[in-house]
Length: 187
Image (tube, rainbow, N blue to C red; front, side, top):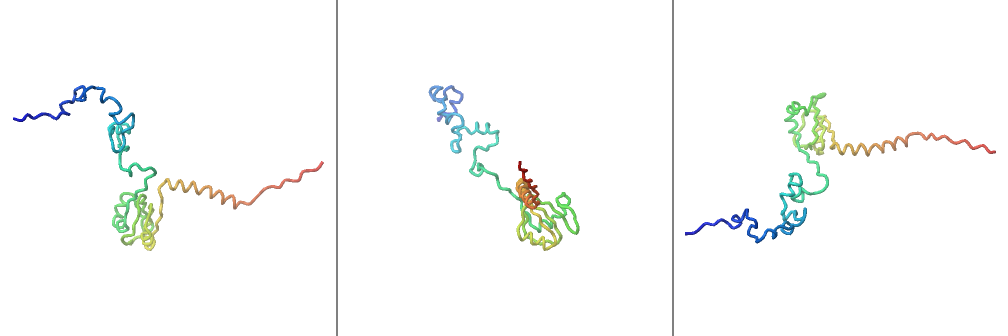
């Protein structure tokens, strides 16, 4: 009759030495991957639970290179075609995205790129983040207009950049009004 034994690692759980001989054998930093944050690299993950706790629970320390890249992330825009705009115009009006204007509709689609698939039968005045050239042509051909607007950070930057240029133009166009000094009297 064969006796079923528990695995050794399970049998030694809770014992003081866990079959390693004496306690001090696994006490040092050598068995823990090093002191502090050392040993927390992507491959070892010896201190993964510690790192997750220390970084606030959001696992941003480990991950593929794309998640750890520095710099600002590119703006991710949603895409919408002209035929979808025409089809969903009633829903846009209901949700407050569009409103009826003179002979057409005004739409504010920030965060969207407008693509030119489909035809436009109504006059649309659209404000969007980006648009394709074909979409712009089709909207203007139907009698509408398309205004492109970058995100707010770019607007602030462009406004700040434009202000000094306007001051230079104003100072250049202003007439020179320097008073000439009168010659000093001789004694």
